Length: 304
Ligand SMILES: [Zn+2]
Image (cartoon, rainbow, N blue to C red; front, side, top):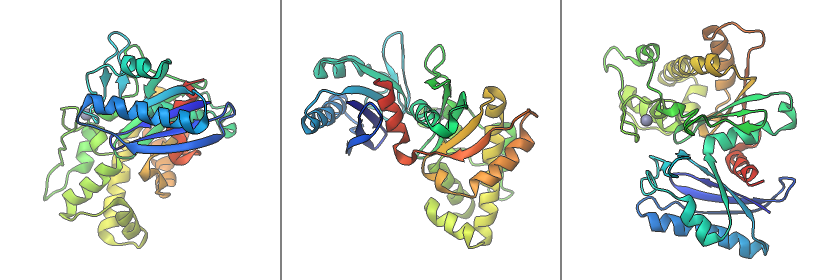
């Protein structure tokens, strides 16, 4: 049995799959973010619960919102303060008496999406998650690409480009400069995410609205929402175009809450081709096929 664990800033989700990736079990628990020992307990407990339910000892793959150093095993995970800068592999492996695989959650997402019969001939799958944060992963020939220091595709901590900042500038309120949990300001994570979408709306209109409400207003052609979404689409395409040039993917798959906003797809496909270098085949931007379960499915694939 393959266990995929998707560990986020608020919840831990475990899904168990058989070798043909048919889902057999799903369990969720809260992510402890304040105390390291509580975090390790939560991971161990959810796995032991799966073992008991399925009467087996599953293989484990874990997707984290960050990366693990190959040198000293410490993780970079600013969204989960109690493990940021600490090693999690050894205590989990010791307590569960089995090896674990760890990768970035967006890499797990890209890996999962790349294993899809419709993308059988797509060797370079760029996965972008527009969720609580903005994450990215790249699967090359159905393997995730991590780089020399496991930091490849940490695109969320790329600063806004000059052109993107110009697009955000409002004549009466200036340019929004948001603080990121990594310590820097102006990281894409704080703008291209669902959270960023809502924070930007509040910056421009001094009004708090959830993303689905803003999208509903846009569909109703409410002028503020239409102007805001157009500006956001400009921001998104200006920010993603350099990555199209850098990675030259066959396809770009979107996941996370904002990926359910269908207007993104025609707009991005048009704008990205205008903003990126000319190429023989332009990558299509598509919606994740495996939906909310894609990251956890990819984590389980690590366990194979
Ligand atoms: Zn950052």
